[in-house]
Image 1 (cartoon, rainbow, N blue to C red):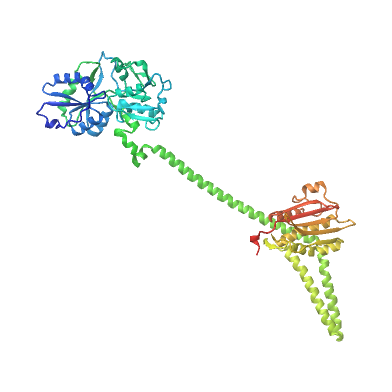
Image 2 (cartoon, rainbow, N blue to C red):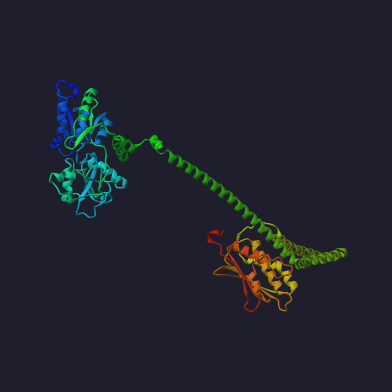
Length: 577
């Protein structure tokens, strides 16, 4: 029998003269069954209210909501879920709640059974619903969908997204059972006790079906899958008079238990509100679209924690940034101090090196000074005699030449020893080697060392500080001279050349070579084999060479003695002028 729509009749106030009371009832098993199920209640009310003609209006969920909106009914009997929604939307008020009769079996309650065929061994728990074809009555059905939806949601299952298919089949609810039995659906959601009622009517065998996560509610032999909720209410609409509602309520409470149910005082529907709140439906749908103030109000403890965490993070980041900046500044200061210290050591090493060669350099300067004195004396005699003006002129030229020679020696010495900041430049490495040999020549001559130099032209350019390279070479020359002290044969060979590693310099001597101990500690600061040495020359020389991207090392000579070598990389083509 199809559901009738809301009847286009005037509300009670306009029907006062007709003496008719219209009661809308939710027909979850069809209009005919609904009329039969509620017939005892209407018959009892007709006896208690003889001046009224009572009429049951079976409707589906949508039809019943529309009837309330248009006030085409005076009272409603519906499931607790729709009652909560109609209460919030239209102000209906429950005046009685359905209850079990004292001798009733089964007891009345609202719960859901999630059913599957017994042959499906893979479907035993609610968790097994994931990925199945699920059948239900309608999205707004209470026992036919929403009660089970809450249980599934608490297990992390969204029926709309986590199933292979969700099908709403509408009323009557027996369609769900038929779909499961035929295999059109794997699982179905029905109202509690529907299977047992259909079995009692001979429409199915209980052993052919399984209730998932089956449990028994106290006082009922029906298997359910969910918690139980308060039973159906009998409610009056806002336009229905309180006096009439009171008479109907008293009549319902006085109704004896019949056909398994009776009426009692309105029960607490808070569990139903909790379900709607959990699912964010009906009166609580606003929770899906909460305002900023609501979010702040509901989550202020977490927001406070998050704010404190963010504040701590900002403070932590600021503190770390401050520490990093301070340590960076300390590191820069330490590097600057180390640089100054290294420059001081380099300057001290140059002074010490020049001090070792002081007597030789003094002898070299004395030679042009002695020549100047002799030429000046000769010029004086010629001037006194007044007989050789050409000789005087030649003497003056010779004096000027010797003065330039002495000035050149002093200039090289001053350039070598003055304090300065390194200034790398593109140069031919043979040039600082040649200058170093010029400073060393007097010392070599005084010690009787034969110096051989191989300084080819056209070498690839390097990027280096000229004075530092001169210092390195002079250190190697001086160390070679010291190693050959007291020997009969004293030869020193200076070589510059280009190879795969860049441009290299080698200083070879005919000394005794390197002992194992000296080889092990050769480039360590303050290690020396000289009685009056500082032990800084080779250490600083290696530091200088490595700062220029090169390498300094020592090896045994092919014919005895030792060979000290260093290489510098060829300057990049982009750096060339």
